[in-house]
Image: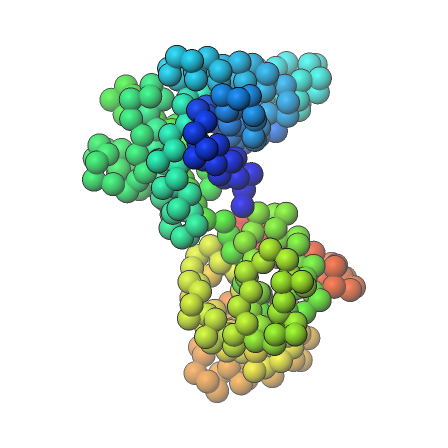
Length: 329
């Protein structure tokens, strides 16, 4: 999960313990800034801190502002700019500027947002910067113009500042992380899961073989010890999902590929040589899969970097997945 969302969970935990919490949010950045818009820093009344809004240069000022917000209940907006020659000493690499909004943490609002995130249900968190309103969209309780504006942000990865009738709103899409569905609990999958986590992906490993698909081999990973047909019925193969098959076994890989090519996933890749894939395509054609659908499958999976061994193959696979998601593939 992105660090900003983990910060929200930490803040919610403190609030549930009865502690007042202030939340600082990066509204926007210019130039080079270590933390993008939407990054959070939570400050509890006890002095505990979670998250960050910069590379360390402005956290002290933000901490003091957070304590004032907790005392007064009034939100604050802070701007920080650093010249290039001072950049490294204060953490804004190569110079830059950031705007930060500090407010009292709203536990019910953020609890609902995190619940939607856990359900992989895209929502938009809209907060009026003067503190006079906050909504989890879509909801009929919000102004119609705001709902219409937020509709343009569902599923996006980046927040935005918008102005409606002279009121400034911060629209923060609460979007589920991209999901990497891996068929085959093999050695390459172990390396791939670790790398995908660092890149912000949620991994799911599908393999009915209980000896391979274990928490010990894939700690902290969602495991489905089912055949791909059954597993894919329970998973939502949506536009933020990628599917990679790694078993080299037609009875595992091909049902998964047939399901994937009929879904709006953003990447499909499968392990195997070109000769192996040609035979695979023949069998899939015999099952009625169209040429257009078959063309969506990348085989051999990954970016061609001359990779050797599980770790390097995992690097090439993740590179291909990221390239496809970012439109560079």
